[in-house]
Image 1 (cartoon, rainbow, N blue to C red):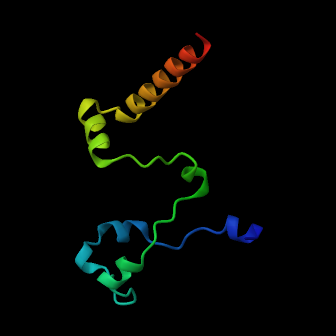
Image 2 (tube, one colour; image 1 turned 90 degrees about the horizontal axis):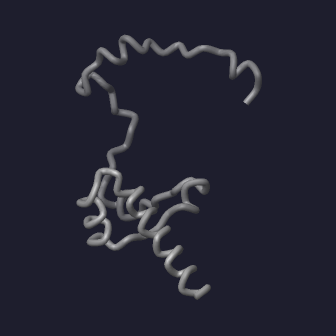
Image 3 (cartoon, rainbow, N blue to C red; image 1 turned 180 degrees about the horizontal axis):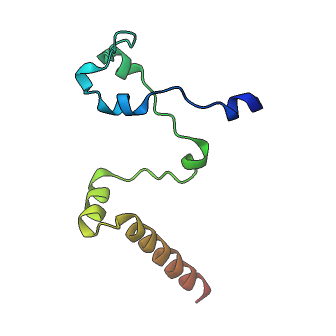
Length: 92
């Protein structure tokens, strides 16, 4: 990318685009997403986010989500409590 790319402005008519309905959009140059596509699809997570991924069993996730809207903070709190308890047991 060069400096000219950064200074150029979009020629998109955003007002016209926002006024369009889904039916008005021309999708003819986009191939349909078939079952075969999804069978071969692979989820790619950016490296910066991947380091924080933890795979939880669906029932565990459902339980945390049912406890609180801030279930991510609750999960973190439970894990932190476990670490503190484990550290206390090792020093005792």
